[in-house]
Length: 287
Image (cartoon, rainbow, N blue to C red; front, side, top):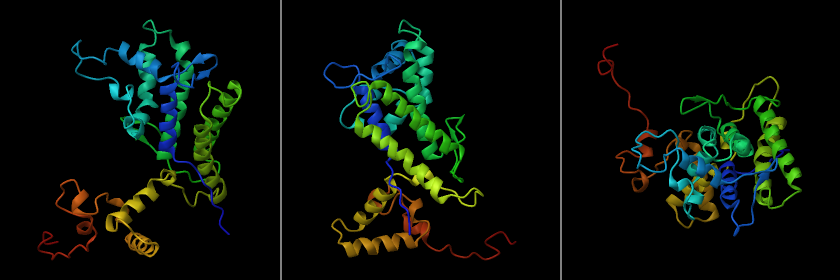
């Protein structure tokens, strides 16, 4: 008997959180996020970035301190779907931008403390799920979870506690809190990882869970692979394609599967997966 834990998809959760921050504070939207009596919105981060002077090249700025652009703040339907922009909002880069510039007639650090806390919690969630050890020279220290009470399990529980206390403070699903769908997605993303760790891992650390594969990308890539071979597959064709792709243990390492989507590369995945021809001793330098 197998116990299956159904979790959420972390990238989609982060996009939802950032989109909620974008909607917060505007009269024509239904969100006005608050924590400890202080407002939280994407506009607040934008003001700090503008105060840094990096929003314009008029001052001769050539080297950037922050990974930010107008695409992060002036959004369209396409940019709201870009995971890369969302994770750059919920990052230590944004926290640094706020701390460096919030005193420039923007209210000070106390006003921005709840927003900093939210960004730090989401940033840590991203690092734990992605098993990020290093990022842009910064040590994150995340690793695959290999025991039921791993330090990352405790951190995930603390993030869950933070979200629950925020919801309780706001009186439930009000305009001061995240939408119910976003909150539940975050819950299941965290609980799915914790459930697998607590149920299937042993205290002797004999096996580990690579939590970066807990999202929906693995399934999406599998479907993409199947449809690249047959745009209208039957159930039998899906089973056949899945069996063939899983038989090659290294197939998942390669993004390109054909000349059509290899980005101009002259080699294909089949070239790398082909058996390596043996070389004679003379060809190998005579050893």
